[in-house]
Image (tube, rainbow, N blue to C red; front, side, top):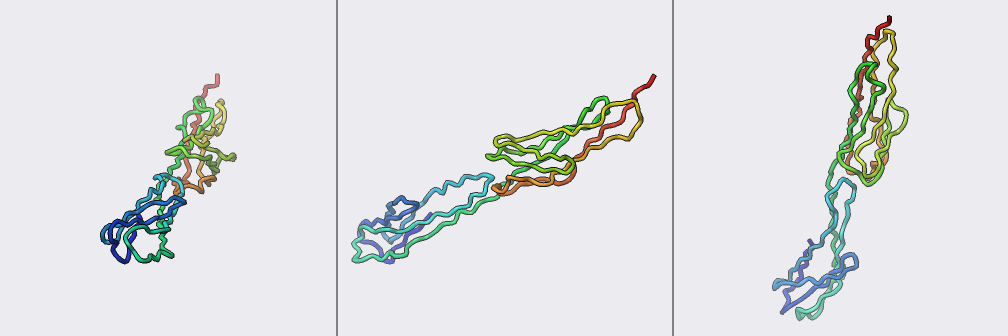
Length: 193
């Protein structure tokens, strides 16, 4: 909201012309010479960086029976502060099992809301970057585990952690944990006859 104030009260009706982004608005002055102009800034509450500003400039005055009006330099700028709405990114894994049941551990990267652009996640424990496509909220990948056999061996633990997220520079804030997410495949007891 912009406020207009004349140094002297008008005699009769008076209107101030105010230009905002190429549009002229007529602002009526009250008996004290004051008027207001409210402009919708158009910045919706979202997760993207979109701080902005609006400048209003007086371009003319009509009515009021003023002898002369000086509005040179009568301009004001309103800054619209961007609020911080975070996006949550999580990494989960399928639960482990025995060698007989499990042929790999599947991991899922999940966003709490779809984004308008791709983001790519690099990981510790998995060589290839994983991309969550624009408009989607998740992506999966699988790490192979050893095949079932008849030999005794230690349980196999698979561990993956988020290392870096690319393509998120336009977000106000992205929350994610860098702690490893693990799943264990247990050696089963296959019988040799």
